[in-house]
Length: 278
Length: 349
Image 1 (cartoon, each protein chain N blue to C red):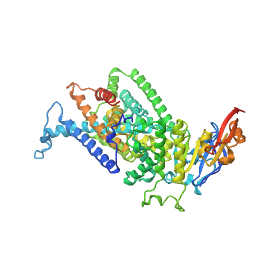
Image 2: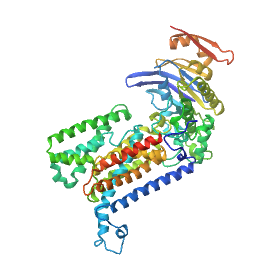
Image 3: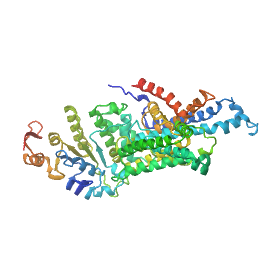
Image 4: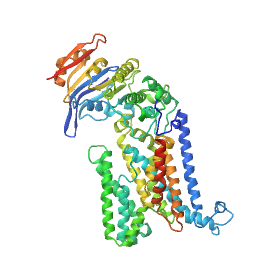
């Protein structure tokens, strides 16, 4: 379980998050929703261990992530940022192999097992055919999938190797591995949005990859996520199972928008139709 | 399907063993290139010498004129070119990755401007010359480089807990202008002969005269190269962005610090030896990327070898093209490198 407890954070003197409580169960699929400036991305950075909380704690399977070794944490928590821009022309395979960094010693080169893992994650994200392409020449949707493959490569352990043993003293057979996604659909067309949702759901189902998705897209979140956290002005307005949280009242409270929420006949997902600004 | 453009796809590693082999090939290949340049360069000059006689051990060194010309008169200069060229090329690679900007050069962050100011003050004021003898200019320029490094580093780290690459870039560029203005001011006040000497210094000159300056430079350069050896994979990840590198387990702040300090140290030492020789730090890394791809485990060693060989060859051109007159080597690097680089760009796009 990834758990943020009484977490607050400020940039310089500007407070961004106040007393946040969020828990992401192992194998969970949690959406973080909220208007611009509500603290979604900051929360994601805190959950990734990129920023230290000013107060409170963030724990991964009961271990404080600020006390964890960066490389150990990288084997358990990976991030797919909104956009990845490169200054140089790396191949897709090189990008995915960069996900193996936390498993390698200083001068160690990626071995056959790492290559195997990279190819497996490329296959899992449907990008195996892009392996030899230059990353910069890919479309936005392809880039995102490759970055996701690179993130997944962080989780994989080399079978029989000892590199997983020092992760945590109490490590069980199925530790929490969390994929944090920041606005995964913001630059994608409708078809790729759908493909991304399918991919995240599939990873969650097949590999028990825990996922936290920050998004503006209420319908994307409603269709994908089992639980939602609604933020406004750095505070949690509502959190819980999607069906309970996504109501006209909470949407009004978070976005100042009057909305109609109904269950879609075919998908059985909740669907949000914004009606007017309040 | 679109084809990959800038890099040659077939050269990307297709298997892990392949990467090991390619790193080995690059180290040996580009290393051999640098060694070949260092051996070949001293053979060229107004007096023709034979390589066979240089290494003929049956003739005592005292009577072997060819060996004396080779080892005493010309080899130090070739070594100077190799050390300066390799250092500037490596510093260029490291700073381009650190700043995530392919247009960064070893001189972007103000280190060379600091070095120039140091050298200029000594040349113009002339006073410390008597204190340190012929070493005064290199010592002063290295001190100036360290001063600039300290100022830029202090500015980039004083806000927040991290190292801001934006502030690094802005502080470096500003310091470059500021120091250039002070240099112009000092030159304006100096008498014409001193101005000529200082202008010559800025154009670059690898005529070190003996091995001693190189031995001195080896200290900071060696330190920088030890740091460079550990950097390549972290630099690969840094080009994804600081956050993406950090979530993959990189200690970003430490990597940035090591990258900045080692690249600046190498640049400072290189400029102290040869003056601010331009273009090596940008053309060599780009040329190398076209040849071997973007992986810094290949780019860094290849750039060191090619930078060394390139500057040694340029220096041979500098002292032979208009012989007996000698051209400033910085002019040659730009005149040879510029058009070639442009041709490569056009050919590959």
